[in-house]
Image (tube, rainbow, N blue to C red; front, side, top):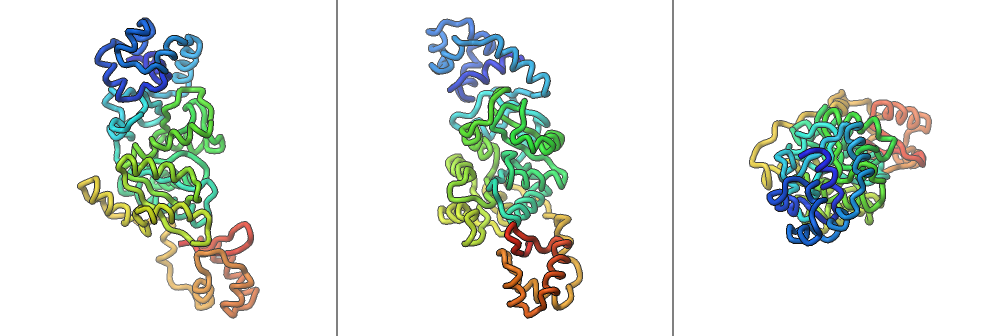
Length: 367
């Protein structure tokens, strides 16, 4: 089929992948639908909403779609194309057409979704990036939503390998949202792909991001949630995963952190607890892959753990400093070290990447 056919197909509401695969055996092309009477369309199983869209066919909008596809080098994959991800075909309401920028072939590779808060803690960002690095290193494509926060950290972890990563977008692929991730999106296209079910020109409306969440989970073997508030959109991705028969994984956090409540809720509902990458890989091996992943490498950042033991005052400080933010005064009181010693040691540990601070000036260890 031509790009013109697929652009029309993508703009027919309520006509999903299953409906199109049936319809494709009865007609020559989607554009042929514009010449059929309403009764004929209904007889072919075209939904009423799609029939109304065909009657309102706008040649100018169609031309704009084609121009945007050519300008931004967007590929289109129909549900009856062998390149269409087989994991989506069984899903109710799967889109009849996918728009793709980048490497189309990665959509058929084993994928693992990773999602989480747009307002994560420093520990959450580090955890997400390191886990994504591990998973990508053993051959899994990391799939997320290009959002700020955990999503971006997961894409970044995969790209650090470097390895493929997929971003499922809530807009048309002629625009990047958020705009601050334009450079990240370019790197994703080089190693993996941007994917959307939305035609060019589609704006970043809230319900589009809710809608795209089912594709993040549907493309993947499972979903790993790293930090999520009680009402986080990441929980909708996890819910879709459960409904689609995918495994749901959750990384636990502090009982004092609002960003951990969503993950703890998932754990109470039966999600698999994640303390290391091996927890996820072993579960996926058992449930889905029937294969053994290659050994997990150590990320570059973990080289810090191989350094010789630090001198005693540093060990005292690290023992007192947990993974929860702690004030400078509390550290001075618990270690018995002078204020100048604690301050200088914290500066050194921050430079080494072993300690970080939050916006309130409190300090915490980095795993």
